[in-house]
Image (tube, rainbow over all chains, first blue to last red; front, side):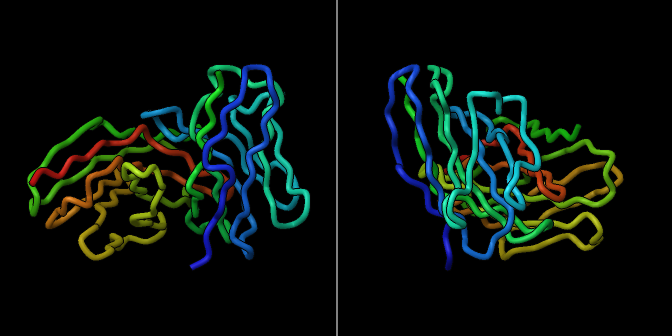
Amino acid sequence: EPEVTQTPSHQVTQMGQEVILRCVPISNHLYFYWYRQILGQKVEFLVSFYNNEISEKSEIFDDQFSVERPDGSNFTLKIRSTKLEDSAMYFCASKQQGYSPLHFGNGTRLTVT
Amino acid sequence: AQTVTQSQPEMSVQEAETVTLSCTYDTSESNYYLFWYKQPPSRQMILVIRQEAYKQQNATENRFSVNFQKAAKSFSLKISDSQLGDTAMYFCAFGRDDKIIFGKGTRLHILP
């Protein structure tokens, strides 16, 4: 069964550094998402991406965050200048069409020190 | 804005028992869909069951079923004959078009 793949599985970075989290969504999916889960807490919506542009973003997704789909297969989340509070599990997800369920990757655990 | 509320932060049941997890949501939309996701200790997010709002019939997937009450905006998950492998965090989710939002989750422990 096709999967959403995320790399790396764990990223450690120093405060103020830029990080790029990478995702390869399922190939025939059209909608792409990033979610964040601070340890033990709820899964928070960050951003949705459709037709090569952001379709919706949350208040968490400020100017420090950006997304890109550079080559038709990868979908990346960039955090320009990481803060301690950015430490979380970041999940990429994709879905085929509007009413389809989300398929999640296994997540990238980001630790900011 | 839509909200999803799970009022039970944590629950424990004995293996083989039936357990019901509660979820309510708030929306002004008429067309939407609802999901339950399971997150075991591995932290993967696994789809358990889905329900389209236009369908009156409650969705069922093996031991998992929902009680969807559209007027009450309620979407509970029933797990029958619970198994040790059902131990996980369970998230209720509301979706429309391009956005899916999650409740805070219910941590479910199945006791041997």
